[in-house]
Length: 315
Image (cartoon, rainbow, N blue to C red; front, side, top):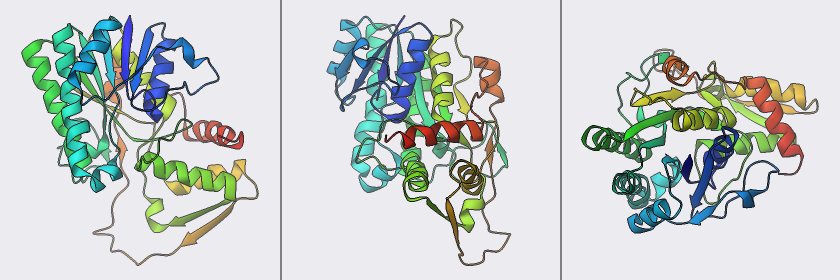
């Protein structure tokens, strides 16, 4: 089975490419940036195509040339970049996603797995959020993801393409940082890098809010399973996250065990009424367990430990 991984040079895309290899399939990475695997493995063993997903003809050529059977679509501009360049998010995250679906239709690719995000939900109204939670995105990034999901639904209904979108929690872990990418993953990386290199973290009251984190290898494994398993995924969308919500304060506690000299500073903010204070939330991953037999392998302590070790090696 040959799998095209768009955005293969990104944090999630690079790990997805490795996870596809681990499942015994043959990935082909594509991106506008240079590609390398996130491990010490020889990246030259993975075919790489430099292309922009806003170019439909180039996508079709890549699918035909490499005889692609399935697609994993992770290419996208990240959230904060989208806020600064709204026209670009339409070109890349929206039109680019439609191009991936259209190329799949034209070349007879049977399954497309798309990287989506909890940004589609907007303001969360439940402490445990499942896939039936209303989608009311508050950012153009989230709105573009909703549009891409809905286009995937249309291609699934109208053209029979097996489509599923995976809504990742906040993703962290070792891997390439593609400047000028800016978003939650980049912010998390900055948090961990400061802890390792400056031996300091600064927390605020907002950092006591639980958020659905997912270690990048868990996100990648779920994505590869959705693509490579024999049976189709019946759900249109699946949440992907760790076992429980975690706060940055929780992360700091784990870091303090790994870095004894770590200095933790708390910056006090204005008091907020409990009635308006944001609540901690977690993602339900019950459907991913059922559909993909997915079980997170990296609890917070294991994920942070591996990430810190990677950063300490000078990455």
